[in-house]
Image (cartoon, rainbow, N blue to C red):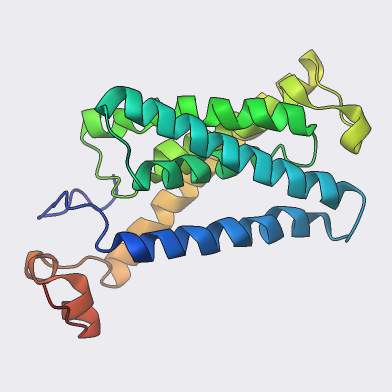
Length: 218
């Protein structure tokens, strides 16, 4: 929205699925530290946060793979990885407030909602190369709302209910609006004061080669 569409857009998919798998594995591993580490303790809530993270990620992976197969009539190595990230992004805000049984539901909903959410930018022709809005944006929004619906006071003293749902809804909407406005301003300022765009020629040549002087055999 700020920079406009790229001059050249190619739908080639990942350059190397092996590297994609390794990268996703590192991401999944790191997410346990990201979520459980946020509790700042090595026990108590951290244990259930750790569990919820794994459960939701795995559920998102499985459900996304099923949805993808239903639509494409074939399995893909990439789709389960995206589903796992959707599950992880969605459980993150709720991981310290729900039971593992609820984490299963959140992971499944994450896969379903995000699977169809990523179709919106494509239909509207937004240039979202990594489906960040549909997976991280919508997933994070959904996970925050789910605290108001599924939070269990046994976990962290917060119980689901109308009042908590209202708090979550207002909070996540404020964060969304704030993020859009501030990000827009930062990008506009950077665009006016520095060079944050790449040229059509650089894109055609490939950013690895044009910016980093890295060449690959085809």
